[in-house]
Image (cartoon, rainbow, N blue to C red):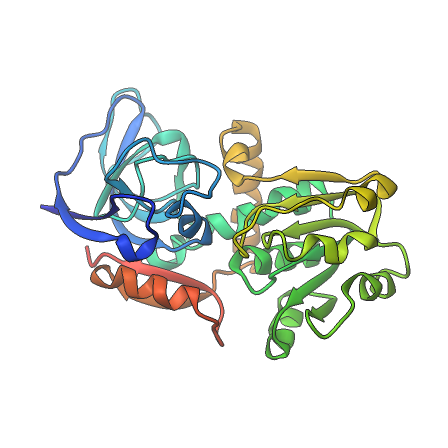
Length: 332
């Protein structure tokens, strides 16, 4: 039988259970992947605590929105997908059809061919980080020389991807981190400037780093503990792209600063752009091209076997000296 990791309530990753399960046949419009590898994401951590952009329909429920595997069955009405080919899942509102298993059935609209010359582990770690960053940085903020974009928690995979992509387009990318030891990594990743939080008055520092213009956009997964610290440095018509709650608290907005800057608060989820076929096509085309040209590359921190999924989460939640994706290999 196949295996799956599930939770039975919103108790977090410590409640994960590995169990045997039946392999499901794909329905109309679906395919089935024999999963080779799946990646951990902070959004999954929030989902297991019921503080994400969707909730489970029922329990038990699988976790995981990002996987790579071999197509082994195709449902009615699916065309253009070859049995035996490696495909990746694109992050979407997956509800109970998570990828933390040996096999998953998924709507064919939410898969894409694995990038050429990447392993299964590498392929499973591409789409969440780079597409999460692509839309707010490129499509919405219009990254270009003269644009000032703040990336908080910049050592996260999505934050680091934002630095990578912003650098490609020549924007002034400003990264925040809690630790001085991360400075060189962030500069190598594309940051023009690095702010070590706790050692700087963030808004005043941002003014200096932008020649007093202020930031045109913020790409922020932190929450309550960060927005008010940079909001006095919002430029005219700035946008705050808020995509997570690393500090566990939804923010109280700095309304006065936002009034004065005519700023917009944009609760942002990649899934809404994946569900838009035109935007999905733009995002995947950009990532494929950037990978092919060597402008982007997946960075893998650690790989764990299927049986050590909980240990992988324990590692992910701790402060790390290395950076990159944490991935599970199923061994199939």
